[in-house]
Length: 308
Length: 165
Image 1 (cartoon, rainbow over the protein chains, first blue to last red):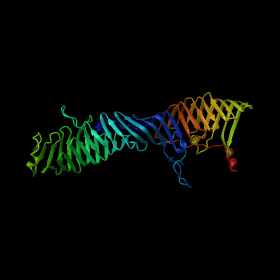
Image 2: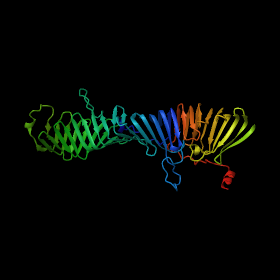
Image 3: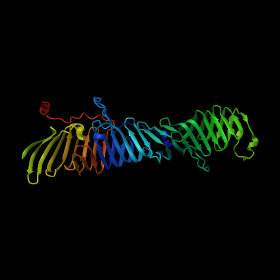
C-alpha cells in the first residue's frame, strides 16, 4: 500500500523556512494574518503544497503581560505584519501536496507549525485522497506528520492493489479496507487500522476491531493481522476467531483463538483453521465438529473441500 | 530652500520628521519638489506599521501636489525599520484622498524571519492593510525568533517632558 509503510524512510528533516509564491499577498496586521491569493505555492523541507489561496496566521504574543483591565479578545493582540512567529497556514481550493513520491489532494489543508502536521480534508462532496505510486487511500481526514513520514487517517477507505500478487490468468481482486482510523508508521512498515475494520476481497468480508498491515522493503503487503475478535464471511460460509492472520503470498487466512467455521449447517472447531481464499479450501488442526454432507449435495465438486 | 528640515505633528506628537537637501515650493498650484529627502516616521503602537518601530525613509526625488494631496517619491525609495526590516522599490505614490500608498515597480523587503519580493504594492496609509501585487515570492520562518519589541511612538525626550507637564 501506499508504499507508505515502505522503508524508503527519509530522515526527519528539521523544521525549516517556508518558501512561498502567489499572485498577491495581502497583509492584515490587526487580524494578525496574511492572505496569499492566486496560484499559491508553499514549499518546506521537500514538501510542496499548492492551492488557490492561503491564510498565514501569526501566533499570539507570548511575552506580553496579561491584561489588567479588560480580557483580550481575538484581534486585540498587537498587530502583526511579517516577522512574527507563525501559527498556521490554511490552504483552500484544489489543495495538492507533493512529498517525495507521495501526493495528496483535498479541498482544504491546514499546516500547523506547532503540531508539525498537515491536515487535509475534503469539501463535503469529495474526500481527501493520498496516493503513493499506484496505491490510493481516501478518508474523512488525512493527517500528515511533517517531522516524520507517518500519516493518520480518519475513516480510511483503502484499496490494497498490491495485496495479492494474482496469477497471470486470474482476475485482479483488489482488497478494500475501511476503518475508523488508520495510522501509517513508515519506519515500522506498518499500517494500523483501528475501530470497525472491514476488509473486502471478492466475496470475502472480514470484520474486526483492529488490524495491522505489514509491508516489505519494496512496499508490498506481506501480512494482515487482525486481533480482538474476528468474523469472516465468504458466501454462506462464516468463521469466527480471536485472531486472523492473512498471508498475502499464499492467500491464506489462518484463524486462531477458539476458531470456528459455520458452513450451511456444518460446524467446525479446531485449534487452528486455515482458509484458502482462492480455492475455498479449509484445513483444520485438531478438528471436531458437526458435518451435514446432505446439505452440500447441490454443490459442484470443486477443488475446494474440507481437510480436517 | 537648501538644507531643509521639517516635522509633522499629529495629535500632539511628532509623527514624522526629516530633511531634504533641496526643497522647492511653487505657491501657484501648491507643488512641492524635493531632492535627497530623508524622513523618520514614528508609527503609533497598535497601528499596522507599529510593529516596525521607527522607520527611516529615503528618496532621491520627492514631488507633492499639496492642493490635491497627492505625491510621489522616486529614484529608488528605501526604508529601514528599527526592528530590522528594510526594503527598496523604485517609486512610491501617495494618494491622500484615497488614503493609500502604492507602487508599480519591483519591491524587495526583508526583516526578522522573512524576505519577500513582488512587482508592486498597494497599502492603506495607516498600514491596516498592505497588499503586494503582480506576483509575490518569499520566505517565512515558521519557528523563527520572535521579532524584537517595537520602539514605536518614540518621541524626542523634551517633547515627552513637555507633555507630562
